[in-house]
Length: 375
Image (cartoon, rainbow, N blue to C red; front, side, top):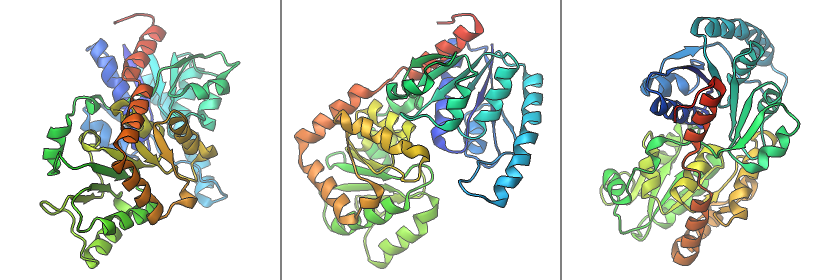
């Protein structure tokens, strides 16, 4: 079987595609997998590093305002359809799977119109416009959240709630080994702070208060992933205020990016993060309590909808970005770390929402579309 996977831009679209590819190869080692993305998205690094071939098209996402870039992108979109048709003609896939990002639209649309079996994976509780449109032409839709199902009602596609696929090594990491790997003490709780692959300025600025509060204290360890954009500003502030970090026994690590996120999640007792769908899938799979600060400019506010689904089930505390302060964040973190009963209940609620077999279920749908079962 030949499978073409389209998705890109951020890790939230690429890691699910890689997980699905891995599940397909586990079912059928002879399956051929090809990715389609862009040269400027994270797929340009992550896909080849995972050992898969990548074909690229020249395309950018549209901005939510009138701009010269949008005008140029109309041209790029038209040209990309010709590029996509050539890729489809040369590779001749048996199934095409889209996992999101602006590259997904033209690839899946062209495949569906060519009669190739197609599947999209919708990660959010509130589906984006592109997937709502694609839902009218594809053969199947795999949902990360059951709350998204009404948006695909009345379409020809078969709609299945599978959960969101996550990295394969997420459940294999052990806490003590992960703590030793990073130099943390396994006997002291660790709070992991991350704004996702792009970083989050509001979270980074609020986290400075936590660093200041625990500059000399040893009863909480801080693992702060800033994103590339804010990294220099954050370490400059910490250094100028003589707050120790990235030193042996300091109990504080500050990094711009981390490829070993499964290890970081294994080490953490509490996570502070945005509310991207794949990040939340990883939290629930690990059974991790969280403080979620949804990105306020996400299309149709889908991050807050994602976050509220966890909050409703008792797995998370949600703080709106506009209400976030350093004092508020520090107080929430300290209160939760001090309340082991609540933290344990939140962890159990998160674990109950986890879908560890999502990638395998989606791979199974792909094989069904191809017409054979390799389970």
